[in-house]
Length: 213
Image (tube, rainbow, N blue to C red; front, side):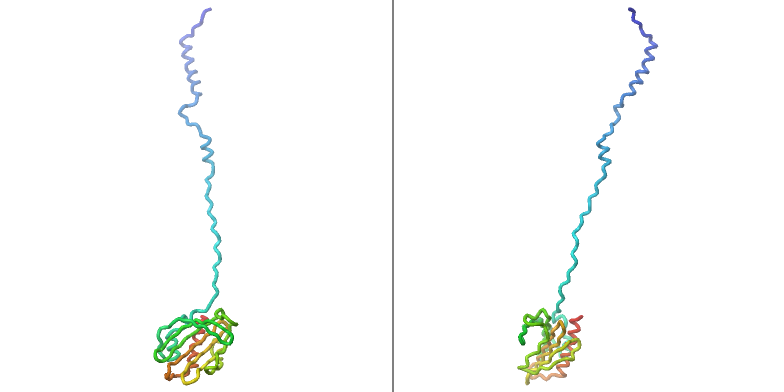
């Protein structure tokens, strides 16, 4: 059997066909799409939540008490009331027991050297350690006690004067929440000027107004 040879022209016609078939293969330089990368890119970014702070408790108000005695009276106040020059105040306190009652006062003392000493005492309901808060009458075994009802800003009061020859005055001016006591003690042999009761009442009215303010 004879084998038929292809002519050179036929070989030339086959070459373009083979080249065309080679174009169907994937380009080695193409970068394949990464499915996992596309999935990650499509995932929304999680925004961190803002932590909720604990609620702030409402402010509390402490129970209102009386100011200190030295916070409501000065040496100038005493000089105006009694016409004497007083030195610096001295803070103190005192325990009182009268008529079955007991209480503690906050004190502020002033001295006019060689003339007199004045002590202002403040007491509130919470300072009574025995019995109910009120306006107790001073003892009259060592002096004379009279009502003092004409004190502006007070619901009542008392005025006590010691027995002669020395002079000691004690004024109590009371409200529903304050027991104010002013002790006036002149040095032996000193002749005071003016009316100690009226002077002490004027001072008490000024202090009561300061306590309320």
